[in-house]
Length: 115
Length: 116
Image (tube, rainbow over all chains, first blue to last red; front, side):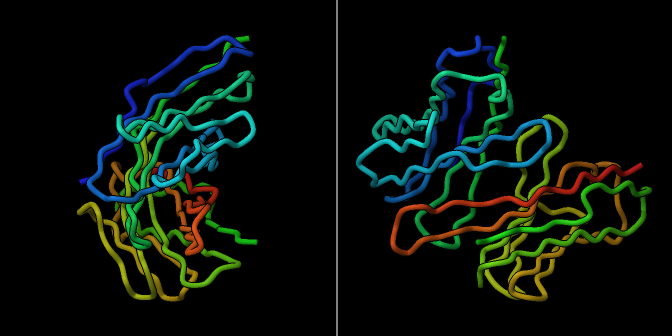
């Protein structure tokens, strides 16, 4: 069975510092996809970044990058130069190789950016 | 471009009353559709998903049901709401690229349900 683990329930970071949000996963599928979502207080789920298991390079999207370490089964999200607007709940998620596989989510990490 | 709609945005219902939440997707065909529930301050719980019209998979036994009467319409229902049904309900769909690259799940704006 697939599993996503986010071990940091909450984090406090000073503005402009870099942030690493941890995510580990477990799967027996040979290929899979990993995702990160941001959920601000408004409740909307915002897609941030995607990493395919066979992608050779770590995914990057602006200030977001995914530190993918396949052997360690980790997919940490790195936010560079954090901003006050980055304060939100962050979810790591995973999907198996088949189109009809459902996406499973971790329990989330609440990030607080301090001015 | 693809868009996902949910309504209503907020809902307050008494215990024992029925429920119907609707989700529609524009700009795509044959999407995989999902219903999630999120309790206050908690993670996402997958309730139902559908890979096609009339095809519903239930993840959690409960007093909720789902239906997919049309390709781009997904409905969450209940005949009698419980207090524990309160939460934030999110509909989502998959964008799957056979050519590789982006493959992700997009969410609707959500419905905040309070059962009193």
